[in-house]
Length: 297
Image (cartoon, rainbow, N blue to C red; front, side, top):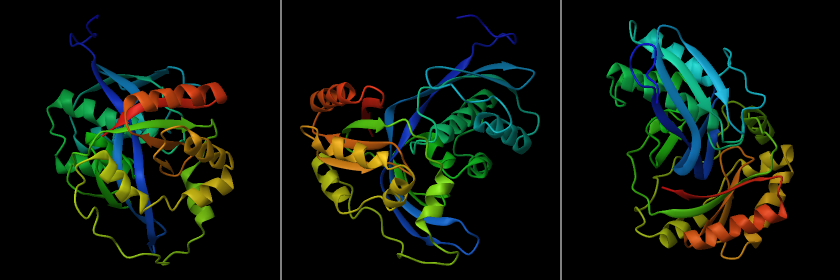
């Protein structure tokens, strides 16, 4: 590996996919933002981000899911890097190189994970701890899912993504993630939900009653919840319904759900053998879909 122009090797990190194991919409605040509660886990798959330290900030994008993405001011990697520089004057940045593997606008935090990855690399380059309060404020300012993606550890998140519970050690969950290739914009899903500012649906819960010690126990807890955005998301992208049906029909499928605001859905299995076989079977049925077996934790 060649050294960068500044003499330092490029820094690298994985921007792991975020999966909402459940998602409750508590209501809509008077300022228009929706209050949520969600148990979040992270997959073993994701995008890759490298930072080549240097005098100027830039971004290049490659990879199987790079089509349609622009390295301009709308890109969350650059927005995160600029926000970092404003919050920490005099710090170093450089050239970012994003390898995009996750579907775009798919409910698994691809853009947010990329932004969080940029903040991780900049923090590492400049000797700033991930627990630094200013860094966390920067993450929250970039996007609602960026704070939980900063450390990419399972935890309960609440509010508009600004309230995070302690990191959790969940039992390993063997999953198949599926996206039908239909981008779903979060704003449109919340609009389809139809809540007016000030509407309240649910009281805040107390989180998990106790941390399950086995995957079967965790699935039982999750089976009593759901994703409140699944119905409005299917109004926008009816393909989600077919994804859920095909996942539920796979041998060994134990729990099926949509992640985030869609369109990515997932099914949980007992072990890696069952999840891998299910992914292969579904990929044969629907070769145009994005299908991946992975581990959530």
